[in-house]
Image (cartoon, rainbow, N blue to C red; front, side, top):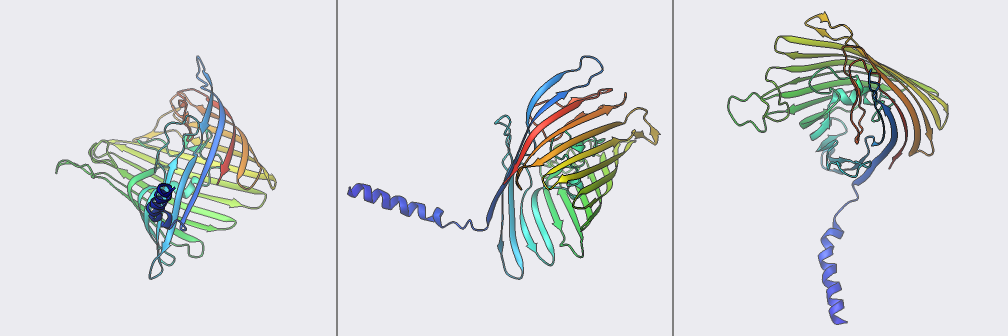
Length: 362
């Protein structure tokens, strides 16, 4: 009996430091979004059908803050992606993860792995964001990388809102792995300005990526090449309906070749009742222009229609249909943020998908 009591006493002492750890400033949050996607490749010859269970931006996160002196707070966030469809491929800190300082009067400065302001400025305008009907199948395409992206080794600043206005800026440093003095170090710079005062939201954003030596880290690629993007977006939202629009120009420069494109996104949502809504979105990728000359039949368009039913404030079931139509010289694919299946698309293809899913936030 004495041995048992001594063992319990020792265990209690060893557990004390962990028990005293202050977790009162830590918030656990997340989202599980899973869907059954019935997809067809829509190839001109030999179209393929597939049934996929996909996880759509499912995540688990921890975030918190601690008040410091002089009106400052230390802030942090660790957000991980959850591959709930396959059980493999989840990534610790694979989504926005950072640490930094925040001031109510001066804004927040963070360091880590972060969405660029260019991405964050309009992600909330995509009424089908994260799933197979995500507008990034066409928006932000045309260069080496997707423009709506998350960048590593970044410094991010977000100003406080002043009468609805705010700005955000990001710098992502290359060169961490530079091995020689002759290495060229790439970089990503991104900035956005926002006005958010109900019922209006408006934004303007610009982003540039300059590629450095392939081994130098953040912006490895072909030295001297660059990706540029510019967009404006906005929304008008009332109790019964919302209308969103984004206009985007992209410009990829490789040596003496400049490839430009203009993309358009228009979406609307009508709330039938407090817990039922219908959604419609049209995305258009314009014909590419190579050194000023139009590349014929290089555009594509996507039409998506959906229905949401809120079972509670945190749980929504949904159904949607989406179709992407490629012209003869285009090669876009239905992508979203899904896993467990190949991209569906290709030249002259008209891929389609029906998606039935549930999203639960916590």
